[in-house]
Image 1 (spheres, rainbow, N blue to C red):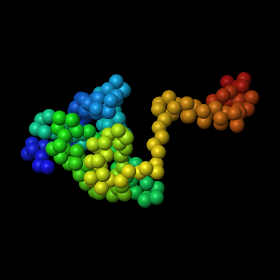
Image 2 (image 1 turned 45 degrees about the horizontal axis):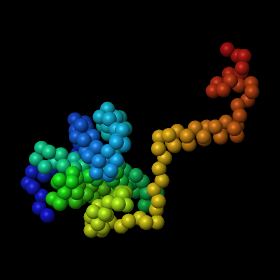
Image 3 (image 1 turned 180 degrees about the vertical axis):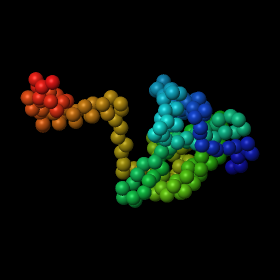
Image 4 (image 1 turned 135 degrees about the vertical axis):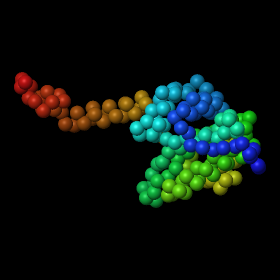
Length: 189
């Protein structure tokens, strides 16, 4: 399918954060979870363009209008000894589908993965998203049916992190003569 001449894909810049957040909200609506987006512009500025960017974003435009995006980051394969490219989100607005924009974003990602020496590209898709599943099959992507995705939320992360500290304290209680969190003996000042 031929894309319009005014179609462009480019890396996102900090001034694109409002567009990125709009597309995140559009994606959440498509995925039947419009009220679950907690991200703010301030957070996105920090995590995407701050001191340690956690991910990168490609934006797709038709003329001046944003029509889609891809959010990705690098993971690592110990078996391959190479980085991988993990596609967190790929989204094209429903009214702009069928024009080859999703495929164009994936081609751009494949070029990035190739140029950065990645051993593979991976992503997840919701089980009910049959159009996306068919699209990925047509590209030659294979589902990883033998794998199950696990997740800890912020609360779960905190609980796990805190449980490790509590277990360590139970296994190695501080000397009764030492003040907790100090190298000074009780009574020494």
